[in-house]
Amino acid sequence: MFLFIGSEIMLFGAFFTAYFFIRVVNGVPWPTPPYHLPVYVAFINTCILVTSSFTMHWALQSVKRGNVWGLRAGLLLTFLMGLTFLITQAREYSRVGFAPQNGAFATIFYCLTGLHGAHVFVGLSILLFMTIRAFRGHFSPEHHHGVEIAGIYWHFVDVMWIVVFTTVYVL
Amino acid sequence: MRNPLRTEAEAFRFLIVAIAGATIIVACSYLNEWLGVAAAVLVIGGILWWLWHPPTAAPPSPAQPQGPRPAQEPRRRILLVAPPLTSSAGAVEALRPGIAGREAEVLVVVPTLGSPAGSSTGSVEERREDALRTAEALASALRAAGLEARGAAGGDEPLLAAENALREFRADEVVLAGDEQLLAAARERLAVPVSPLL
Image (tube, rainbow over the protein chains, first blue to last red):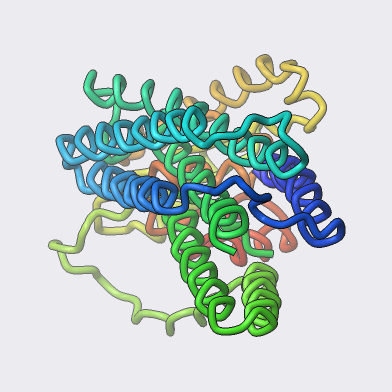
């Protein structure tokens, strides 16, 4: 797990270094005029993603108490909210008005949000398998390690989004 | 060092900390840019301090008076982490005093004791089979002694095997075979009482 965390910190750290270099060292205005970032949509998306972590936690607590329907509902809700986040982000890309080749600002914006989006996609793939397995009755209060791992990954993805949203959209 | 992603509950708690930290930084930034920078330094420093200072373990509770236990006492769940070649008779004798007069469920986990390189290259299968055989033999001996027991092969080393097993088997106690150094490390890392398998 430490290797995973270390590799993820280095991966995101490289992108954030580029971001701070562009914004602070080079002093590029953020966002570069005439572009605007859809902060309101991103905030709603953030709320959706954070809520999905709460449903993930609820799913885990449910299976630990033997509530299989709580597990299924929690996983399904988490998956649907994650999917909503990803679809909203894709729509945001299509409407944001700039492309990755439109300067350093645009490049790092797409790199950071895209890197996080890739993590959400991986998380959704894991969640999909866990949801299918939950509906097939593969988990019990004693055996739910797969859901636990999926939950850890999902919360990690959420933590990274909090950092990305705060630095890229809000500050 | 605290691993914020050790369990789902800890990862969830870390997310809450991250949200709180981000909220403080954003609020301070709106008031004043440099106040935001100061808040960011403080919050990041605080999180790093929190990560580097794991909670100290609660002091052990005073010894309970010995004697016959009441019949309605709940069933005890014991995680036995034993290396390969542990003798079945020794395991039974080690567990007997702690469960005298009450029902117990035992999960026997035998770590594969593989090297990290061996594990990553996939050459651990043979050792896993050996570990599973030992675990089944130990569990069988415990069942013969009247306990409810099952065996499983664990992670590459005893502490990892114990941690993984505790995620699925909520034990009241861990009985661990190993030297004092290993037992001390286990008492620091595991959230349940650890006793030695003599």
